[in-house]
Length: 157
Length: 402
Image 1: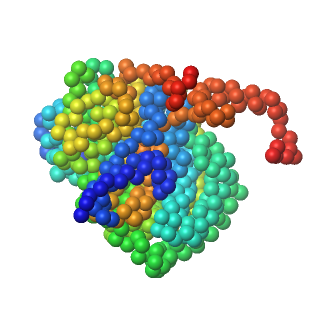
Image 2: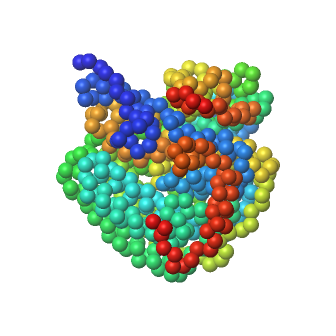
Image 3: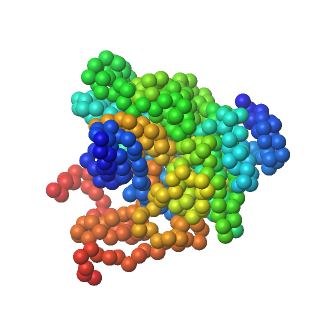
């Protein structure tokens, strides 16, 4: 299926919600939606266009907002669904009910960006250590790494 | 029966890299499995934001020690798109050649590991011996066995000549013969087949739902291969087939990989015989204008994905890496459930896990004097230059100091 045919199909399925759709490169389609429409959009794309494979979720710190990109793949193209959520209260819905394989990516986002993923089946930390201080999110742009003072087990200086 | 929990890892003799698997057992049956990652997390994505595009090329190459070329190619072709570079045909052919050679060495390595985990030690020794043939080829082309440093923005850094071409084609005959022998073993050695049949079941629909990738997915009967679906480099010109199996178990994963080896030999032969003339690279700019790119690559272990966002400077705004192993973890949990505890290493090895890849990072320890300290790259460079100056020019007939 060509890119034009896929865009046509997405416009038909999503109607007015597919307004900002762009096609900057061959086989790459970007579709911005609001966080409230995310679950429904992913569900429709999976059922009607066979976009069942979630390659990953990329998070980007855009200053005022966080941007999350859901890269959905089928054998014809990659459709990236883009959502923005405010930095002051970052909140996105979980898509695990539609694509169960999204769980590790969503847990990684919680660890790295401090975003709250609503209805996530398993909210435990995934990557950061158990003794990681609260409120520290490494992939935010304002987070800077400082080497902690070295503690030698058993005392000494 | 009493249910009890056992931790496997982060450090465990059956695992070659640190990961924590927590098993809930009822007798010998695994009732539930849980994962905890992060024991090898190096913060590559954060580090990449503070390095230039050309520095990141070497950083991404060091995400993994087995599929190093897959990360550097995925990154390079993404940045090339952002820079709007037209890479010369010959450069793309050489790049694809190294891609396929890397797949061959990775699959042969994995076959050995599968043989070893299944208790078939001679299979392990055979495949690893043959793998040396590919390692030698890679060394002839790039000068290195692991980090080839072949890629650069705008093409590849080294060309290949007629003599190298001949040597590779000669070695291919041997490799093809050996691989056909392995395919025979896989199909006819009853003890090996009995050990891996029906182990680690992953039904087709479940593999799709859990977003599995690569040979794990293809062994469940889904013909997804980035080289066919979304051709990069010169894969749209090269004839090859996507290999699948329907048995959905470890046997299927062995068969898929052996068949892929045969396809790779075909691709390598085609590339060498149709190698176009011309330059291998073009000059790349230092700064990249604002934009974003989503780059996909079929690594030996499956779909490798890089998302790169540029902001007009010489450093990326964001580099997101998703290695194939991370995508295969949810499927691994499903495979382990209701299996036997003795099958854990076999099932886990069957996805060809690369924990390094999945966790992305970089730290250097200097432990020569017993204390470990972090060495800055600039310091490391200074040490190397000092040492070089002190030793002077190396004589041709100098002997080992030991």
